[in-house]
Image 1 (cartoon, rainbow, N blue to C red):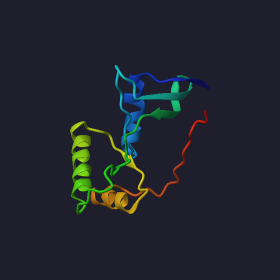
Image 2 (image 1 turned 135 degrees about the vertical axis):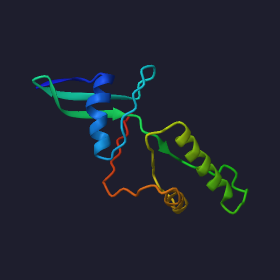
Image 3 (image 1 turned 90 degrees about the vertical axis):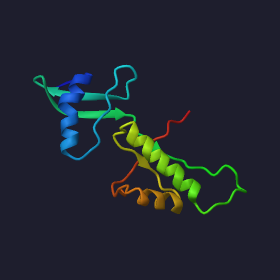
Length: 127
């Protein structure tokens, strides 16, 4: 078994079609500012398995800075709508949001985000 980093062409031709077929977000490939790298396992020169490390847009937090300002939620809804437009305009491949409040959960549902049932893990490097 040989292990090496995939080229952008290999990510485009070998990995992205598999991700698309499985209904998963494809990997961004950017020559000037890399947003992913993929370690591959090759058997007789054939890619058999891969493990990706990539940047994936994460929404949030949405913060109310002025604790005295009151509205009917229009500002939060407008911010969410404008962020959604930005993600569409920039052709973001997807995004995730951690609904750590009922407001965030309602916004995610309003914008038809899918609630995941898979376990989500977090790693924070200790300094």
